[in-house]
Image (cartoon, rainbow, N blue to C red):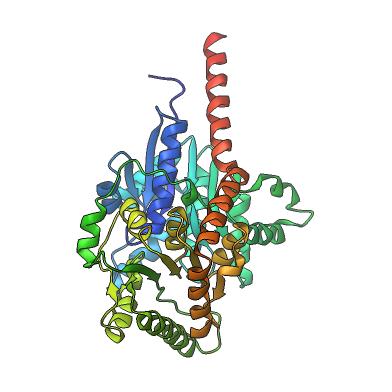
Length: 430
């Protein structure tokens, strides 16, 4: 057996309903294979069955705390499983309780125990728009208790408003050996949580790194023609692309009114583009959860193409790259458009959007979802058209600068690989 062989577990992985999450995971796996070509890749996921179909080169186990939904008994089981996970994250003394967990979840604990590196999947899972972030915190604490080294791959951390939530995020940060945040706003939030005499040394573990999607290097092409056929996209007109998010507006006084305003604003933009007469308009489906909202907007505008297909990241990127201009709410759809050098504007539903666009020096192409208007979107659309060539050059230059300035996570992994190899060789020689 090769003594330099490393066991790496990727955790806090969700299902395949989100091609944005998929591209982050695919990019991480590509980087890990490059850095540790003889490494043993494993994963702990919410839905390990779908992940195994999608990425058979990784061995998958089920996240601790999962239970079948629906019945009272299932909810009680989930509480029991989460309690066991919490106890184990506090002390290895409680490891004997693992035998009460399903086999697939016991396997996850074994993976953590055997891991040289436990890497939390890159993304935006440590903020409070959804209470599931507490389960992600628990995943970090479990990894810390059982694994040799815990790394947070480039994350959007925060915002978190409650005292309990901020305490939980701080615990996860303190339990991590290295923390990579993917935008300046996240770094500022982490600094705020840790900038006290008690925790200040932990700030040395924190580095700003870019969103990993900007390093996505597809290993295969997708048949763009067949993707066009699925959407019934003709070749005689240019393509204007949109993504929407079925957002709950958790931090506004009247969420229902805010959502109606968002949908009305999208509709106003669509009517404006339809009136020009030279565009196919497509609402692309990045996240399965958003599909019903996309269909509802499609019913209001029968000429709009609503994408209902599930695709891998390569297909999604190639299809969006065909757009003449693009306005996205799901941020990774905007990243795909930017990677395709498409003039792009973003509707920010979380600080990660405005933060990443700021880091790309594209803040002037962002509007907030809580207060967006149709006239704002029309103005952005017209600007994308009128400044198309200038924006394409600006995007290309900004992306190159962004990658050069924010590659610290990948550089760190390469250093780790070289140092661990050198240490092993030295031990064998001696």
